[in-house]
Length: 118
Image (cartoon, rainbow, N blue to C red):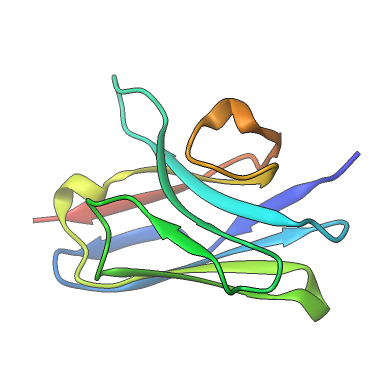
């Protein structure tokens, strides 16, 4: 059983930055970030392969967010820049087969709240 633990969420003003971290209890091939805003479905944000050579982003965050990983620490990061109020959501780390669908990921963290004020 793989355990994931997110950290780094918080309150930030629009235009600001935050960096989320996700620590895994074991080596995971593909890791991803999803988010869920109140009243909305969980949506894909970004994913990164083991080597880091393959990275995918949702159109809504492309050019503003950067996903990276430090395999020695089994940790994945999400650097979020130029944050907008519409980025407000609970952000989840996930590990699994890869892709943009939540069903493709078997392991999930507990989530961390990101709130962007206007």
